[in-house]
Length: 233
Length: 233
DNA sequence: TCAAATACACTACCATGGTAATATGTCAAT
DNA sequence: ATTGACATATTACCATGGTAGTGTATTTGA
Image (cartoon, rainbow over all chains, first blue to last red; front, side, top):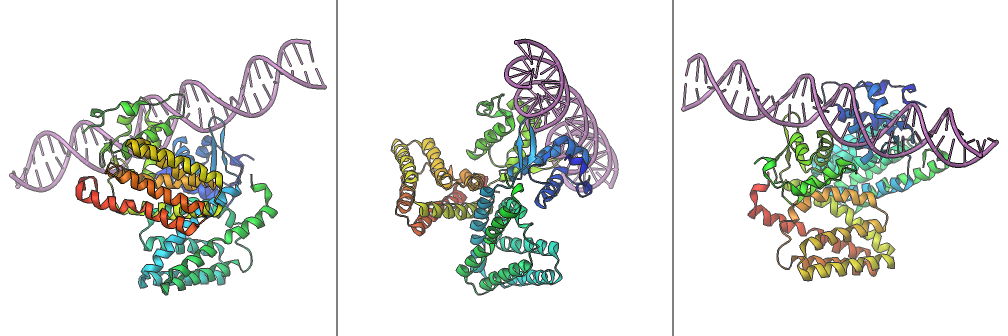
């Protein structure tokens, strides 16, 4: 299917005043993560530029960055394609994320700063509301924010960037399993356990809860391998 | 000082047959890491392109990637500069590297694969030779290879890429402290301790030795802050 | 009918020109 | 002498054209 046949509305939110390459990057990235751009679909500098109303240069820069994220495959002189979901890469992304976030949460627990735990509780409250309302997107956004608060509270913004980058591989998988009944409430409970451990300054408990929380994705992979084999390579 | 006044020979090793952007990236990166390009020095797409005999486009792509590594600062419509050494970023790079490599080495120890330990011992032998010969560059290369073997042996190539990226911040600091007498031998002993722990399948010992090994950089930072304050921001 | 050769279309990649924003140097006014 | 406005130079950023390499369809040979 050609790219232009698809709905292009969401790809048009470009502010010509701001630098375009990062906007395009975020735009395409989102489309890949929520699977509106399907794995293995061909992309093309020219076509994307046409759709977005910009030139090929910033599109190219965005695609290069996406290739570094492992979300697209660039074959020189042949074409650029949305990367298929590779189980090995998802598992490695999980490994990297776990290593980093477990270390981060340990440091947060060691500080056990009341202003931080207060902010975490605020986030938990918003998560609870989203769970009760069945607000999937709202929960996703707040989940992201929750994990960001952890890294930012101990001034590890670069670690957060790394986590964000590899998390792309995980999000593409997670998005498919989130609507499961009771899943959101489960994630909320895990967040709560993490915060409780932080409050008590119990860093080893915080590490354990975080690891368990992040290892949820293993279950999801098994599910998807059975249900949607076509999106894997 | 203008860029063209400096020795440009090392920057000219470009193979026109291969993709140029990655070559330029590696070229400039090396020059930054060994401090031939000094912190805070102004770079410029146009000038670099002229020196390298290429157009500005691949130079620009290389600079963008270096900016993601935190090795250059790009100020739109103002200029691009070699990033000063920021202590906070060096410390964060150390945090990220430690989190990842400790997790990696734990996994390696859990496997305790004889073929892997054999490869590690070969690397150790080469390191020993470099130490005895006072071959700094040789040791550096083999040190890099040693850490690569660890990640690659448990199929964590993306983790290796992340480590490589953040390691830039550390290398720029380390290069200044390596010539210290006895330092290389010390690093060799630490590598040996790690391998020994791996061989015995003692993952917690491997983790400890790796953490201690990587925390060497703390000492270096203190030294440099006293000796070369001008390279910091 | 089938296989090899050829022409074609398409790609990512690089070169180069134009543009708005920012910094700097010059000069006038006080 | 100092400050302000203005002119000039330089920058990163984007647009666009050209090129070599790669798949695919078509044609040509038997």
